[in-house]
Amino acid sequence: MKILVTGGAGFIGSAVVRHIINNTNDSVINLDKLTYAGNLESLLSVDSKEHYCFEQVDICNREELDRVFNTHKPDAVMHLAAESHVDRSITGPADFIQTNIVGTYTLLEATRAYWNTLADDAKKAFRFHHISTDEVYGDLPHPDEQDGPLPLFTETTSYAPSSPYSASKASSDHLVRAWLRTYGLPTVVTNCSNNYGPYHFPEKLIPLVILNALEGKALPIYGKGDQIRDWLYVEDHARALYKVVTQGTVGETYNIGGHNEKQNLEVVQTICNILDTLVPKDTPYAEQITYVTDRPGHDRRYAIDSSKMSNELNWQPQETFETGLRKTIEWYLANKTWCQHVQDGSYQRERLGI
Ligand code: NAD
Image 1 (cartoon, rainbow, N blue to C red):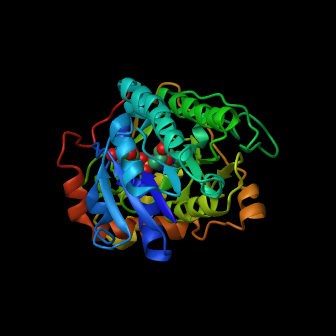
Image 2: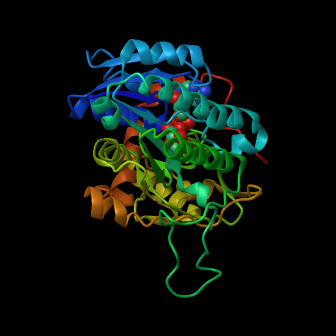
């Protein structure tokens, strides 16, 4: 297969590209605008391989998208390009509306125009895989609020997004479904929980805490730190996405999660404990924890029921939170140059979205 991956220079997209190039015979065309979050240094291990090529293109640019489709003639699209940071969406929602909604619409239209030129068999085999988030479902009851077994997000949970980011992703999910229903474009959607792992831009909780801890800076906890997320190691996500694009059923949605519900404070304390053993210093890293004003509209709990992925596509995460987090911390300790280069721009780990 020739797979057009959008956002392949980002955190999850680069893991998908590395997974496909290193483990399959498929080719990848990586289409990315290279915003602050896109970094070609995350692809150094694959960029000289003959099955890989890069196109610097904005998904809002229809002419350029048409050129890419007509030049490379892909068999599938995996659409990951997005503005992805909730705090940034609170400070400046316009880019989220533009890329996540208008960009997805433009990409769907370019895909449809190309797909209409294909022969019947190729049309049937074609896939448009839209990569989305569990944040479109809003939040779930927290153990503080309810006794007994707590509900999980399933593929039929109603949409109730809370932030400009999750609302823009919800809009894009609806567009993708409509392009299947109205035009017959063979689409599939995945909604995934919080990812962590190597090559994660240090504005997100886990890499920010690792780097701040090592530099002796404050480790900011929003509110009481009792918000619960279901953490998934990024390489487990990449394997899941490849299964969906190659074996998933057209029109279906698949929820992907890590079975790792953790409170934010517990995540930060676990990072501190691992650093205490890997890079010991006079005082415990946990003494750097500080509590800051909570994010407006902060969802309290996300948790995914991923039984459809395991029952229908035989996928399970391979990493536990403990093994994945240790691998992640070891990666950041061994890749200081990558960390310096991605922070050379205007962002210096300051708080956004208050
Ligand atoms: P990221 O911010 O690390 O990367 C996004 C990539 O998209 C970057 O390389 C950026 O340059 C590119 N991009 C942005 N705007 C573009 C545009 N207009 N045209 C072309 N390229 C553009 O994001 P990520 O964390 O890798 O997330 C990838 C996808 O997965 C997103 O759609 C996100 O909503 C979804 N997702 C993320 C998580 C998570 O925990 N990170 C969880 C579930 C779903």
